[in-house]
Length: 326
Ligand SMILES: NC(=O)c1ccc[n+]([C@@H]2O[C@H](COP(=O)([O-])OP(=O)(O)OC[C@H]3O[C@@H](n4cnc5c(N)ncnc54)[C@H](OP(=O)(O)O)[C@@H]3O)[C@@H](O)[C@H]2O)c1
Image (cartoon, rainbow, N blue to C red; front, top):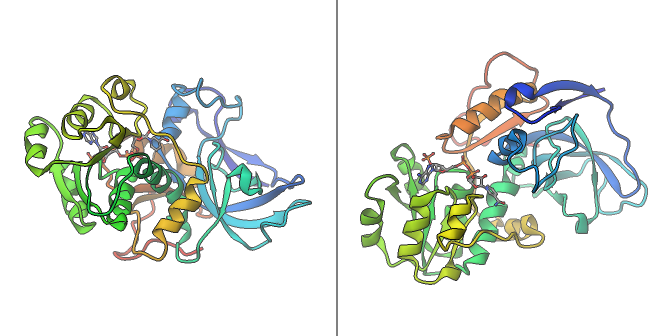
């Protein structure tokens, strides 16, 4: 048997419960993956709340959150040649990773599994798909080139921190909005931080002109300042679901095909890393969701399915460490 964190109806994190489930057997074309780290994202609490039910319908009761994880292949179904037992993989896409084991389609066209490059720890690999993949698609959409100046709203969140680093890898200059507590982090990553809030346009305008913008925050202020400071509509994008952005002339993101593989190509062997701000055992997924929803973390949250379920949050890693290697 193994553990999965499930829910039977839309609501708050109180709906989540741990269930004993069988370790799956792979169908033809599938592999079974044992997860070593699972990424937590805003879409998880948005799905749980039911606000996205038309866009991403879930099978309830027994729904499972989680759209990214890293793990190891432990069983291979008939007809699979792409993976072998023992391969480290990254799972991404369809919800369902808040569990210890999962049967996943192995074909590249299914785009749910990508080989995990050896240079990443399991934790880093688990948090790459949503943050880095989304940031990559956003930079492709605005056509960012070396030597250009990019405005990133919400630069200290998961997607924003990835956008800052990928833009720097492309060779762009980056100005990023964030709360003051995260300005040092942004400076370390090579961006110029600017505090959001009243008077933002006045603070940003002298740092322009901007060639392109990526909004990872949503809301009127990011929309208005992007529309004001980036001349071409095609060079603005928002990853937020906020309908006001589209009305305010900031187009919504369209993900590129095989996004994670392309993102990993750009990252290569660079120093790209997403800070992990908190770790929880899988059994404490509800607590992890509540912390993420509160915001202000300056990094990602990771669930560790292998961790026993102590009552406390796991301590942060020592500086310079990105957690357990896979
Ligand atoms: N379309 C897609 O496929 C897709 C993919 C991924 C994410 N998303 C969406 O994109 C958004 C960001 O995701 P995430 O994972 O990066 O979230 P996150 O880690 O929670 O980050 C949120 C960011 O917003 C910043 N922020 C809050 N209020 C702001 C304001 N008024 N002005 C500027 N920045 C502000 C926060 O800054 P401080 O912490 O410094 O206050 C933080 O940097 C979420 O809404 C998520 O649902 C969409």
